[in-house]
Image 1: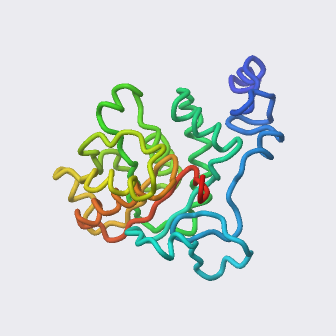
Image 2: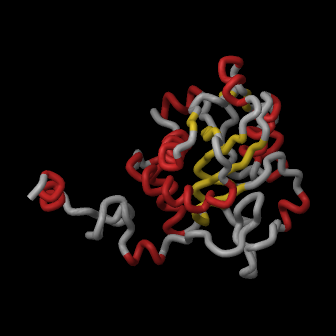
Image 3: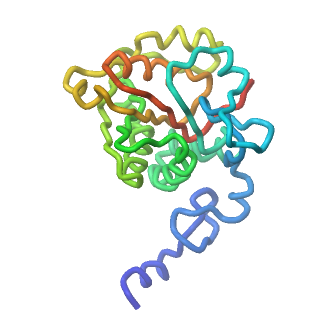
Length: 240
């Protein structure tokens, strides 16, 4: 028996959500899989929210993306922010479950396949330094690092900086969310060369109104990015 087999006998694989026995590491048990709202089928090409219908051959947009000017090109998300999807996001974000970044990145990469481009630069949404100091890690950077590694793409974790603390967006109206993030991000001079004329994929844990992704996209375009697409782990449904 090899070392790997011995370790599996001592530490058998467990469900990443409920710790029930599973067949392989970093997996979900059958019950948790059923309770995890993975996004599939027809989705909005700009924000990734599920849409009614099955034909994914033509570009479809949700009502919000038809009425709100999105500065980015295309977008996807792996899960809906509901049921076990919400629990997994909160465990990663606030429960120090950094081990969730690896399987979550795999789900995100599968969702992102239609919007990936060769030689894309993968960039996380940054935390303000004060929040990073309190939390000790940036969950978006953990996700983006794993996505870039699995996809064989360049990763630049400090391509964006958060110029000021924007506080918590919870409870704010959509307009207030967008107003709160105006010019909140910037590309530092030391990273402009890496961003200029590149197709950029911006990664974050949750997309709600799209205000964060919009502000990040505008900063990247101001630094000369050729295109910007966005990728979230979870998508909050309209009204959620």
